[in-house]
Image (spheres, rainbow, N blue to C red):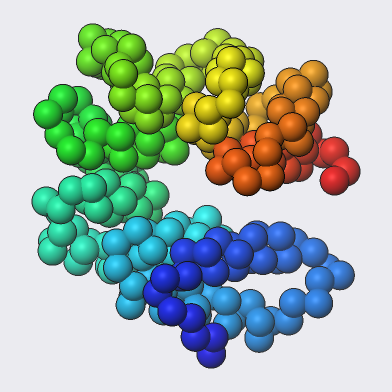
Length: 248
């Protein structure tokens, strides 16, 4: 079995997710069934033994690769122990929403996340609205005043994640969101903090047309090598190319 220290767990989990995601569909892959079993066992062990966000990320990679055994049981127990622990509780609810047995159960967990966002005095609003965006849920229709105020907030991470979440308000807003996000990146100048979240959102949306993809590619390649935003922009380009069926 592979052994790694906790400091680097999330990085290794991310690498393994790409191995699982890419190689399971590749008949020419050199990855063996034994390798795949080892990767799954590593992720399951990480989920059981690590804490907080490393545990959440491991669980999500298991969910996304249809290896959900034990995930719900583990996180129901986490909810009992840490359901009041901010911001980790958001990750617990996000995981449970993704392994819910039906829509009613899923809505119960999403409502908890939404409640955390609309609590304007809460300490995990940014985590909550980021999770709403990842779950493709816009808070705008139910909470227009709070959502609009957050969009106009001086809290840049909060405003950026709310902007992403509101892409899911309607079909029109979803279609228009890539152009708006690329525009935010173009207007950000030399501030990587203003580029990272839009780049991250674009990676999840992956709805770019060829012209938008070309603009994003140029922005990614022109970003300094030491910029923390570069990896977000490049990963958005990579995923969008895959979605568009473009060769890498």
